[in-house]
Image (cartoon, rainbow, N blue to C red; front, side, top):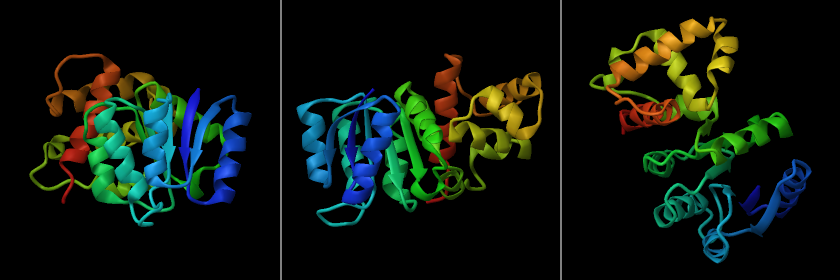
Length: 216
């Protein structure tokens, strides 16, 4: 997979390049500022963009804002955010563009290369990969949300869908049968009024509904 990497820490940047190459990916551009990220993607569109949040020139949320801008110019461009913290406003904008193919992982919670590579593959294929801590901070719903229709177990299942887990992985995490998980997911789709479509598309729409109904 051809990846453009943006990380302002030279040491971490080089470490990520080695990890990605070890996993069989090709890093076609490796930059340290948000403007350079935009320029690199405009010069050669990658299969996936991996970016930090806090980057020069302002050392604020420049990397995440650059990712949002790139998605506006290139709808559906897979974006995987790696960050030390959760930045809510622009993260919400990134997830809410409706295209899927987005991920947000906290750096200190990436246990190994296989976990990172799994997230890369999910995002590149149009799915989501969201760290549970990011889920807990972003997916807070209001009392008027359609999410009020969901049972506590359905909320739990939807949270795992947001993390990018497959039905099988949800079964293993919650110690449920495959049939029970499928029933919960079908109920979630129905209660959130998601029209019939491909299962993958409705999973993304369910996550977007949760994000859209979080408290501001």
